[in-house]
Length: 390
Ligand code: NZQ
Ligand code: ZN
Image (tube, rainbow, N blue to C red; front, side, top):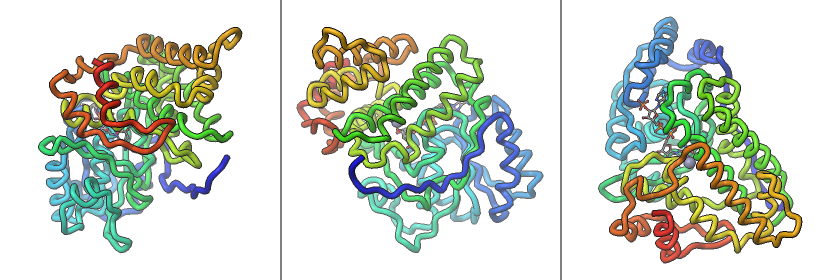
């Protein structure tokens, strides 16, 4: 393992069917006003809202609601939330939902007492909040599995007018102070969202795995998480009510992007960069944007990192190496990935998400080109990959 890194993660997790009861003790650590943030209403239909508000009521909290957080939350919505958080004097932001709601809460936490344009400063210009910035604490109750937002500093905001969807990785001050992970709360997810989340997890794993040539413990952890995800996802698509499978998927999602696996890794986030650009132009579901471009992307870069792809094919997919070239082994691994994607039912064609010959150039223009991974893509290569993904 080469390189230097710091590792620390301040988020306290409560996991399991009884985990919501821990909200009571956590609330004792914060002042009286709670900004309850949630999405388009799924928590009202599945009863989570009642359970959370009952606990807030028992704790004597003054609850202010900030609802209607959309999937792929927008810069306009961020402005609205920041204003409300400031004027109501929020002491805690309690985000109840998926990655969109938790990401949004992070944006609101830094924007509430920041006088300027939060979208420009933190997202477009990637600045960090000042050392003495007032940042509101966040707690999370997770209802959708995939992003890892419950235990990281990531926050992705979309600006449709500017054709941009940008992620900012905030420091520990913005990470949730606590997160409650009850696999039962994810059981009402529509299959499309469940599967999109599963692929999001896989993509986080792959994009941290495919970089570097050193022997790195993070890669062995990563392979184990991939194998767990593949096994559990197969059970979950067959029987979505399988609690054990759903709980393994939930736990894998957290570890896939909670700052551990990236230690001493360069990482390759180009599938996310292209996926986010598709999202900026189409508002498509995050995990599906990644799925639609992954196979063309990995076919494209595989030859630049053959030894790692061949190792992965064997360690994760059980590809037999006998009598095969390294390239054949690597491609067999990508074929196995594609087979699994078909099995769980993700979107494999970006045209299903609204990508067309006409908007490919604009999507390529919105794609941030990162100098990481085994190969540095050019804009022309992004266009080729997008074309292959149609
Ligand atoms: O809004 P509601 O009504 O709650 O409905 C949501 C939404 O429509 C629904 N849902 C959530 N929990 C449910 C449920 N429906 C029924 N039962 C439940 N228990 O699911 C839909 C999708 O929710 P959303 O939060 O948008 O999904 P996800 O968790 O995939 O979050 C996507 C956002 O996270 C960003 C993405 O870019 C996207 O904006 N990401 C954040 C990351 C991070 N913080 O590190 C990293 C990721 O790579 C990702 O980019
Ligand atoms: Zn993702």
